[in-house]
Amino acid sequence: MSAPAPPPGEAPAVTRRALLVAGVLLPGLLAVGCSTDEPAGADAVTPAQVDQLAGQLAVQEQLVTAFATAFAASAELAAAASVLATQAGEQLERLRQAAPTATTSAAPAAPSSAPAVAADPAAIRATLRAQVAAAATSHATACLDFTGARAALLGSIAAGLRGQDGQLA
Image (tube, rainbow, N blue to C red; front, side):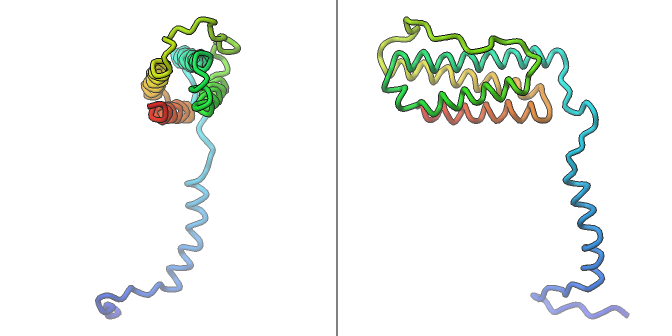
């Protein structure tokens, strides 16, 4: 005969046997679930992906250059958005670390002495915002062709740039 069911609204009591089984199995399950060992080649990069990473490096380098150019043309924007430029530079470094075999320029090109945008601060901000949005779209699109850490990096950079786009609005 089985034990009577507990009255409605009362939680069933946890038995000593259930606690012992959980105490034995839980650490093993956690060790297996939290293992960081990946199979060899799990996040390998194909030659096509190396080229694609190089393209994303170029996109980010152009964005860092766009910030420098916009800041040279508008001191107001430089003061307001310097944190965003720093973030874009840090994102570029992370991309370089993720693509050590990709060949890109060692440093972003220096901004030209004559800005390519109008002298109007609103136009400078709008141009920079468009460049940030374009870089975000490029990284988000490229993210789909990768797996693992590189996909996460590209997706994270794309999301960060979307946030920057909103801050520049």
